Structures are given as C-alpha cells and as structure tokens.
Length: 280
Image 1 (cartoon, rainbow, N blue to C red):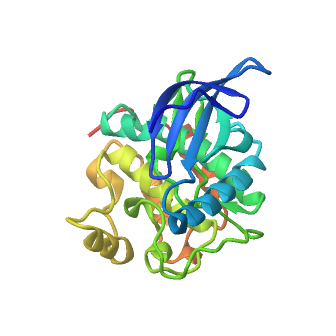
Image 2: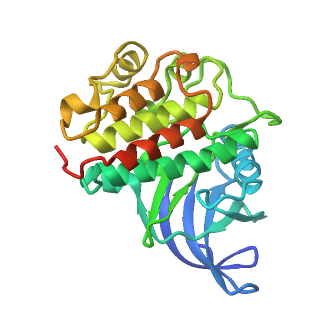
C-alpha cells in the first residue's frame, strides 16, 4: 500500500511498523508541532473482516484514550481519512521488551523494576474497568530514558464495551495467555496478572515457563503444567521471588493476587531485599 502523505491533519513522515490490523507511521502534528505515532487500519479490505477490526480498533481507542498514567501510552486522537481509520498516539523512542528479552539484556533487578512499573499501569487501567487481555513483551516499550510504557489495548475488555468476544475464541499471544483465556472462559483483571507473571519468569530465567512444539501443546501446558521455581533455574534469585511468581501464575484466578497492585508491592519488597544481577 502506498504511504499516505497525510492522515487528517497529520503529516506522515515514515513507516515505523506493521501489524495484523495495519501500518504504523511516524507523523507530525503541525498544529501542536509534535511527533506522533499513527496507527491505521485499511477499511477497504474484506468488509466482514473489517467490521470486526473497526470495532476492535474503536474499543482500543476508547479503552486507552480514557487512561492517563505514566506507564500507559497516550492516545491523542482518532479519525478517518478515506479508506483508512487512524489513531494518533504518543510517539515512543525506545525498544520493545521482547527485543531486550531475546537479547538477554535484562538483569533480575531490572526485571523486577520493569514488572512493577507495568503492574502500576495495569492497576490504573483495572481501576478504570479496563482489562488489557494481551499483556506480552511486544506490547511493553522500554524508552531510551528508562521509562516503561504499555501499548496496544486492542483486545481490552471494558465492562461498558458494546463489542464482546465470542465464547471460546482465543485472543492474544498464546504463550502469555492465562488458563481461563485458553479455555475460553470469561476472564477479569487477574488474567493480566498471570500474563505479567509469565513475562517476569521469562526475564529472570531466560526461558519461558510454558513451551510447546505447537499451539495445542503450549495451551495444554498453560492449563496443566506447573513450571519449575525460577531459583531452580537461576540459583542467584531470592526465594521470595519463587513465591511471588508462583502466586501470579496460579492456575485458578482465585489463588492469584486479588489485585495487581499487590503484585507490584511484593515485587518492590523483593527488590529491596536485593535480587542478584547475575544471569544464568
């Protein structure tokens, strides 16, 4: 698709990414003289599919647009330009957490800090009745100045949302889904806690807690398999962290943290005890 010169009042500068729904551009808002990221979806594709994507896109805009927190990407504007629906948001200079994990660039201390900050942002979203439902390393940005931002509330469920996902339809990245999502059950904010627990486990052990040769075996593991304690993989980790992660990864949501803010508080307490910076 040809890069548009303009989207609404925004001057498009360059393509910076592509996703399942469309293209993300770096652009300039001439009125406010600031750089923005513009997320688009092409409404000229298959009408049946596009209706679904447009609803999802609108939910994302409403969900994230109503949130104002240092650890959540800021949504500025939403609009339509020809066949493209677009969302203008804060332009982030940094790297996806996914890239840092792949490169083994995160010490356990930093992993605790990052996880606590993500939990802070999610706690704020949860307090405003928004559940992310797709927490994964690709949706967490680590900025050049060290700040942490959660992005892509694309499958967020708001209690007031008109669009409901069909029962049994799995949304999100399978490796980071909670057992209740895998089973197609109704999920709440505690699903985000599980997903964040998976990410923390991966950061401190350099391996995912659940793995499989295909999606079905991966999902079977998420529902049935209890991963080994992180300290058994990286002995430098404090025993307290094993307990924290085990609680976040409890199969039954009732056995997890009642609120993700409690998860953040325990992580900070563990951090104060001093997690080793030695990777396995």
